[in-house]
Length: 296
Image (tube, rainbow, N blue to C red; front, side, top):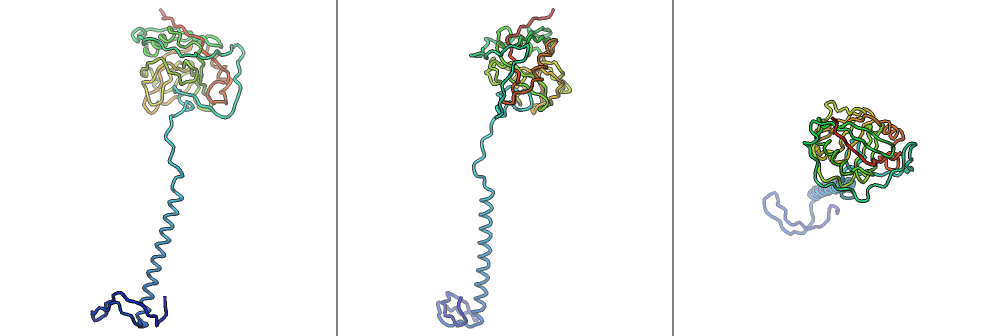
């Protein structure tokens, strides 16, 4: 900006008399020039504030904008606390599974998982009690099956046993103190927890009213959020466990009670969980086969 005698062009200024003076060139009086200077200073000040605000907004956007799009949601893993049917996960620590005294090496899982023909006959189990023998690499576990309370689950177990479905199927999951859930999970023909299953599903039955699963009970594993996903996988409880009902409002079907051989599960649990995957038992155990007999 110039001094008091600076010559400059005025585009259109209305004088006090109302006459317009356009495109005139001349010497501006000191008073008018001072007012013009103040006006320019005010304009520059406003522009400066706007520039600062704009710079702040840009900086804020750069700081808060995500570096990349958020990843797509992925399914929950089998490492969740509840006894779900699903795949196991792996971790970085490694450990060599150890065969316990009194146990034999675990055979390889079925190369091709068996696919039974047909479906269970629920009516054949209603009102009946069965004795089941689960033959494992560490000995026999004897169970009483409650067809009177859980006919769908019992009829399925009887059906799969007759089809030799559980032969050479490793128990793939063990939980304990860290999870606050004390179960050994078995029944997947591939020994991974993510096998194809027998090709059918059924709903939840006989859930404990207090959500406490007592030591020695057999219960069906299922997918979280789907009470109609009971199929082949089951778990044996080796210490009283509270399992609150999941988000779908359903618990887990109790369909049997161990009558002998629970000490086998105890020693597998005592050996701990394999740190290599934080899921499978460190002392491996596999089902060799199962048989069922109706009680008189």
